[in-house]
Image (tube, rainbow, N blue to C red):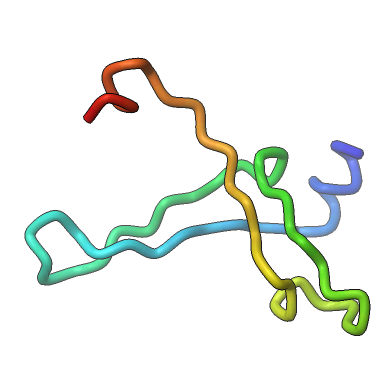
Length: 64
């Protein structure tokens, strides 16, 4: 599975507004932590119903 991810060029990123609000921040995500809920009528991930991004956080980050 890892070889398939490396050779397919599957890149996942997330665009968020910057903290000061005048720019954007691009967060690169690990493809192993992305779970798309695929649409059975389409082969494309862009047509997915939702995409779950698993993110590991510390206890303090969760409380914030």
